[in-house]
Amino acid sequence: MAELLIIADDLTGAIETGVQLSKQGINSRVVLDSDVEWGLILIDKNTTVLVINIESRHLLPAEAADKVSQVFNKIKGSGIKWFYKKTDSTLRGNIGAELETFMKSANQQTLPFVTAHPKLLRFTRKGFQYIGETLLHQTDFANDPLEPIKSSFVPDILKKQTAVRVCVSGTEGISDSSSLHTHPKKIIVFDCESEEDLKIIGKYVLQNNWQKAMAGTAAMVEILPQILQLKSSKVNYENPNSPMLLINGSLNNSSLQQVLYANKKGMVTLSFKQNLLKVSNIKSNSDYKQIIKTIKEKFGAGQDVIINTIDLDIPDQKYNFSLDNSGKGHFKSVSKQIGLIVSNILEEIPFSTLGVFGGDTLNGIMNLLGCDSIEPESEIYTGVALSSVYTKFGKMHLITKPGGYGKKDVILKILSHIKKQSK
Image (tube, rainbow, N blue to C red; front, side, top):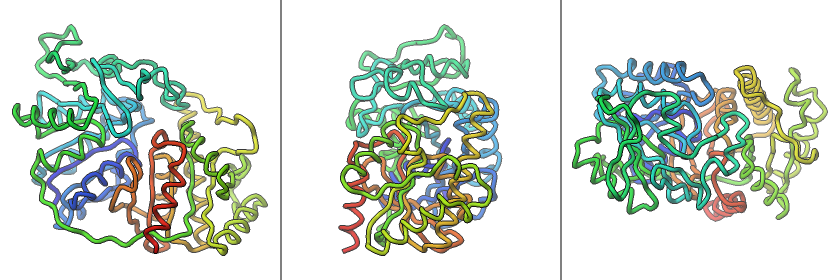
């Protein structure tokens, strides 16, 4: 029976969170869609941690907050002891609105909030978020086509969507960053630059009895077993097998550079032509037929294949999405179309290892494959998760990564890991 509930705003983030626990022998289950019926998973005696993907990153703030509230309404009387709101380490999404509703629903006045992810070089210094030594709003995330980041000061980002008092806790102690001194509630943003800092924050949370409800990145989730005294057990998992089909649906430049680097090193790399992302009769499309032919040939030769959702033959191509609701809706329809294409590929070419970069693309694919939950198993590299999924085509291994994670050689490292485990 679930003891800890984690709420995430996108699917790759949900899996990344669950795997921090699974790799320590703590059974977790990721629910793809908070709107479906997941009551049986909640009471499953083998599930210690339940991670719910509310898919709210691109919603309006009020809609995102309502998603959080709906999850709490579903778990009333369940006996869950602890709650965690997983947020993006680059602070995309409706963080302020979701945290305010999360605090209210969990009935907690003080919310510890850890925005850093030291292993991924995401640091919080005096309340400012950094990627390495660069302020967040000066990185590629400032140009995110759906959620552009315009500020690096965490309290300012939160205050766009919430009136809850926000404080910063650094080496000099907690200081106010809001004029709302009389507000009974507060969110504490913790400075953090190392794994040792995470442990210090954990001790501070326990000392103040704030562990019932916390928020932050997957980095903080990794130390929750110690804070909450979660029971672990040894679990044996099957290893993934080659060949792998890798779908890069992320629009982040980091993922694109990873694909280009892998291609430069000799990996077979295909692209979805733009007309393929619009047609209704996929199987009759000539570009689709060529993709099927190539995958069959390369898989037959034991080679892995990457498919990039941006056409690599068009220099500097970018999706021209506007930032209003229609633009986000269009991107959602593209993700659904990608899911339909992958489902068709699986009908024609059975394989057991699928890799996906980007949460929106992953969600579109899993929905079309008839998958409603995911079992995280292990972490191949920091931010790269290995999971088991049950689809309409049977059991598969799933390798996932949020778009902005990883160095340029991450794809080669993933493939090296699979080949090593297959021996």
